[in-house]
Length: 374
Ligand code: SAH
Image (cartoon, rainbow, N blue to C red; front, side, top):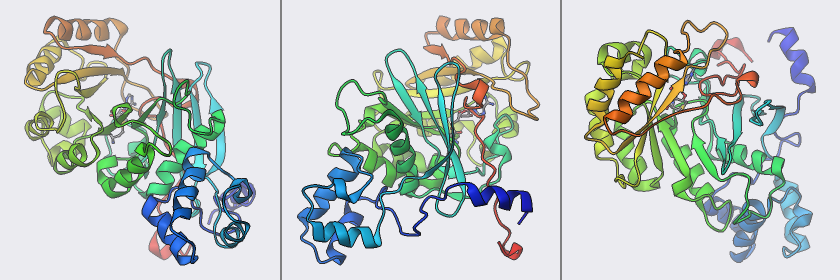
């Protein structure tokens, strides 16, 4: 390993200095197994669940209704550690970003975006990404690995810790919404993302409603139906182009699942109706995809889908080749969609000064080659 890097490694915290595994991020079934393995009665699992996900306990001694004997047994074998915070930054607009480090020293970012009436946490699903979308910073980082369910849940817990909002509030919470829009393609890590969202949605724990959770995909068509049926969360689709020719180039996943197939899957997405629409994300790239003709074609394509559109002015990053569309081009594009009866909102760039905006996330983690020997 590079010496400079090694020196940094030495003073940054690891996820679990004790080397013991953490209970944070385990499902109800997994906690039940832990309890059974410790020869404890089943009702203890429910208590543990409550302490971890409703109360946000960080120390087994907080668990006052749990016997001292069990607390001692848990302390010997488990922790309540969260992913370690390597850095925590706050933008001038109030957006916050955390770089988190997991037990194997891999790292991913997670973001909190406050708005007037809501606060959204943006979670990562993978370290790196396989998709190589041309305009996306994460796309320049090769996939290192999928995040586990616990590591995905751990990101939300870190954000809740930052607001000190335990027990899980039912009203007046800072974190009202969750978007799976951080690093990675959530539908290429479906099982872990699904397990994480089930933990997040449990009303006796973190209590995030499925209506307040949005999963964004670049269009992994075969997993979309299942996502809607099993999780029932809102769907966002990163469309970004109206022809296969351009989309093949800027979202290479399109070569596998072209626009026609993607839109067919959107039309069939379970639970979608007029009141509950699919969000189509469309990054505005100057002179690449922002012409009036493309706005008209977008409206035509999305007419048969219950759709709303989120226009995202391109967020630059070091080495990116694109430019942001002019405000005039964005406004003209939005007006055309509006005239055609399609709801379009322009996403305000948030947290750009700390590289926390859409498509700017990246971590330094690299896949170790099998032969590199650590
Ligand atoms: N892989 C999933 C989840 C990532 S969501 C997906 O593609 O949907 C992140 C969103 O930000 C996606 O819509 C992505 O296309 C968009 N994005 C990526 N890079 C961007 C950039 N530089 N500026 C604006 N939006 C970007």
